[in-house]
Image 1: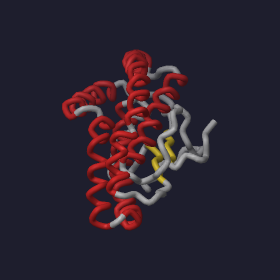
Image 2: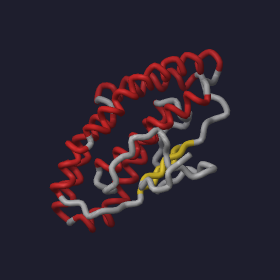
Image 3: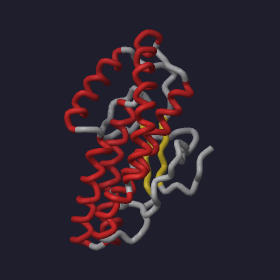
Length: 200
């Protein structure tokens, strides 16, 4: 059951089957991402700093109105990549098509101070997410092996991984000061059914 009060919409449709060839490609993408660090870990520091710079130049309202759509599009691509690596979809990220629905209801009155404080405020959410991601890693590894041999893995596991990526989607929107709502401590996601990939 989804909570429609979430400011972030995240949704992805489960494929009928998974392509075994994508397993090796996923591992390659994961290795490349691993050289940088997990996207959320990198964005934890980067997004608040970038948001703070843009807010200092334009003010909070203009940041949301003028830069908000561009920032959302960039985050959409990142969430697409994370969903692909997380075994939620077989569709690689593309600038023109999205396998994931990711929308943000921009809100609040961000300031430079509030943007930078999110580095600290996000720590509780990051810690809980990190613990859940340990379990997610086990599910992911077994799921990858199952896909390699059978072409699929249990739907309940898919929903668990989807919840983790949805949590990350809420967190990056918060870190980018696109919304003033703190990321909910839940694996439930605000979704629209049926899933209709969007580019907003």
